[in-house]
Amino acid sequence: MFLNRFHPAFLHDDSPKLVYIEGVLAAAEVKTSLSGEGLADCLDKARCFKQLQAGIDPRLDLESHTLDNEDWEYFLWRRPFFAFAFDDRRDLPKIRDNIASWTEENRVPENEQIDAVFVLGKGGILNLRSGFGGDRSPGGAGHGQWGMLEQGQVPVFAQLMTWLTRACPDFSALSPILLRYASFDPSAYRR
Image 1 (tube, one colour):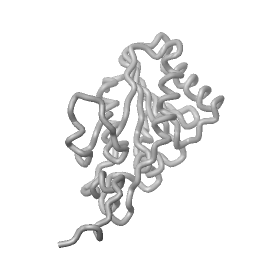
Image 2 (cartoon, rainbow, N blue to C red):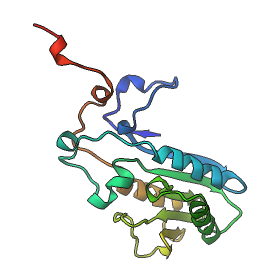
Image 3 (cartoon, rainbow, N blue to C red):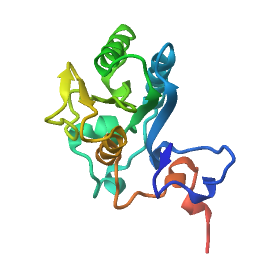
Image 4 (spheres, helix red, strand yellow):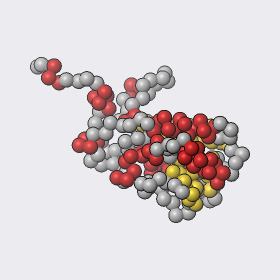
């Protein structure tokens, strides 16, 4: 997981801790290969992660951010999830078709679908869905809602970093995350 600057700092040591979705920029699954059950495993993990919804306060948190309104459902209320694989025997169009088939067969709602898949040396597959305005790349080949960026002049890792900068929400201010989860009653304190 990639955490933003608003995530409580005392949780940033090596031991497993509770992570607050409001403090997450994006989550990823890194695989040696997507072949076999690897792709289905990534898609299932993406679905579970995308079911988490951030508690965003429109009055306090939305004064300044980097996301278009049509992307809020995918990258603000829920956070981006992508997979990165070092290898896959299949070509990029076949991986894209497998993602589309699995998503359809499992009736995954649009807001719980994986956002992107990147395969080293091959390229990336982006979920363009109905509202995703930030990454409708003119050079990408689409298949339904699944766009494809084959590796050409731009290496896959550069494609991934460009996509992350567009998909991850960036706030100028975010109200304290821990106060959202604490039962804090200021009237209990007296001077």
